[in-house]
Amino acid sequence: MVPGAAAGDFPPISALRPGFIWGVSTSAFQIEGAAHEDGRGLSVWDTYGQQGEIANHDTGDVACDHYHRYEEDVALMQRLGLQAYRFSVAWPRVLPQGRGARNEKGLAFYDRLIDTLLAAGIEPWLCLYHWDLPQALDDQGGWTTRDIVSWFAEYATLAAERYGDRVKRFATFNEPSIFTLFGSGMGGGKRDRSGVDTFHRAIHHVNLAHGAAVDIIRARVPGALIGCIHNVQPVLPSSPADAQAAEMCDVYWNKVYPDPQCLGEYPAAMRAAIEPFMQAGDLARIKRPLDWFGLNHYSPVFIKADANARLGFTFGDRPPGTPVTAIDWPIMPDAFRDTLLTVAKRYALPVYVLENGLGNHDKPDAAGAVVDNDRIDFLRGYIGAVNAAAAAGADIRGYFVWSLLDNFEWDQGYSVRFGLTYIDYPTQKRIPKASFEWFRALIKQAVVRS
Ligand code: FCB
Image (tube, rainbow, N blue to C red; front, side, top):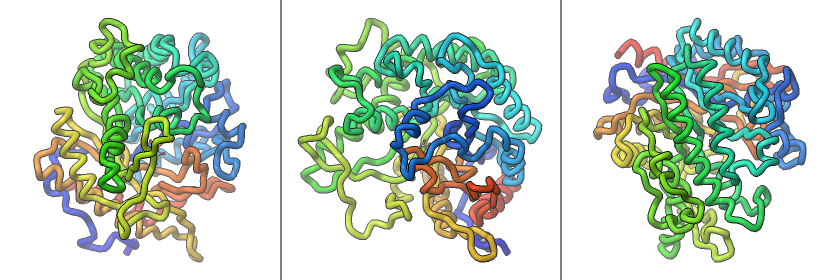
């Protein structure tokens, strides 16, 4: 018996609709490696690595070497029994300078990946932007200049025309609120350009780029199903005195993207701050028809007021006794159920959970097995929450685990592991963890049922 896969060990899934999609998600920079190969340009994350800004001086140079091992990785997905795989295209791999000259070798990599997925019966879900901005564009102002809307449009056109014959599921952005909030809003200025309100500018330009990309994909890909992927977590005050700070954080973390994209307006609390960057017709450019809402969820965040912080808030304490993961993220599946219900109602779109999972410090045991029962417990609770939200009426159509493989966890480098599959980085050996077998057994049961 596989550890964790004992009978009765699965969450209830009876409320999930027929055709519910089970998948996993990854992103280009976190797994591909081959950073200096086949004409790839640099991204801002290569620069952070070169500047030693990542834990243990890690870089994405090799990562999971997925660029060379994608066939083995698709075979893992096939073993899991997945119906879908969400990945991102590395903008600097296909347009090394961000615009202009195309890199045929980079483009061909995603052709091979997509063809291998389709041959394995796995639907490719393509995300255009998972944080790896071409360095050449950052040098010209990145998200702080309105020019980036046309740069992103050029990239979206290329991706739609090249892959749209085989890919129908397109996401414009992954978690825009996280890269703008941590990049400049709460980031302490390290990656900020001083002198202008880079944070609000960037928010508006990302939203405009999203709207432009939706129209481009819609016009070029018959049958395209398009969405944007948002990180939505309940933002809770550390103490009653922090209620206002938490509300402000909620606006910037959870609402500044989906509100204009789906409801056609910025939240009232920050409208004045965005006003200087608005041009006539912008809200209509941002609110384009969407087919689904992508939700990434991990845990609530606790916030306190901080008069010295740029936006007036910072991370605060959680209530004593809150269960947490090994990397100190609260475990609160009921909050996930509530988030699903809120999002489904507020934005009135079918919801796909496109990231959820547990980060820790897995290690193989003496027999070489990785028995990650904490991850199984987490997934059981959180998938149970999806079922509970569906039972309460939320239109939820899929659940994707973050992530297929252990990978480069941004500022944390390789020190944190989120995979269903363990990566032994020195050898690149893939070891499916106990959670892999558990998820595989769950999918099998779920698919038989529907
Ligand atoms: C999300 C990111 C993803 C990964 C997980 C743990 O915020 O989208 O790339 O880092 O967190």
